[in-house]
Length: 140
Image 1 (cartoon, rainbow, N blue to C red):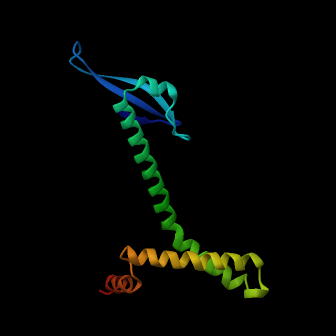
Image 2 (cartoon, one colour; image 1 turned 180 degrees about the vertical axis):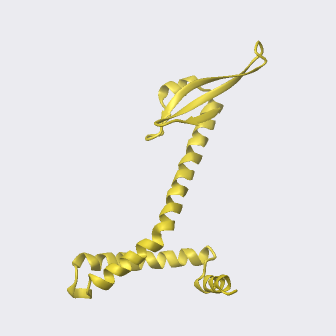
Image 3 (cartoon, rainbow, N blue to C red; image 1 turned 60 degrees about the vertical axis):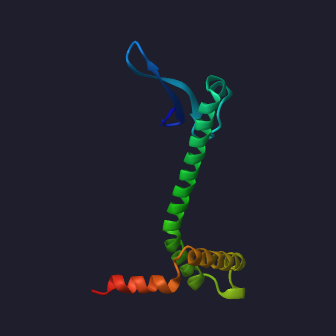
């Protein structure tokens, strides 16, 4: 099976050998909506069990790749968002006298920050090691 992503759909293509042409012949077996990637009943009926397993595996891998890409993009912008939050707390919130929503955000951020630090340490990105690497990069 082959999968071709178009604007709004994913085409599912089956290639079968044609002895008359002495090469493979491709045919679109069905389409899957990209926004709601569920396998339509018409496509289920047109495919064998092995082909269905291949389609399900491909869809699961695609979902994982998209989720990973989204998380990677979000992680890349996290430092900038943290700097903007720091600016907010420096200039707009003044503890218990400030914005009530700021206190809620501050509590959420503290909890998330602790989780993030633990995850980074477990992944091998300890603060001391990163500081040493940064120092080595900046020295001639």
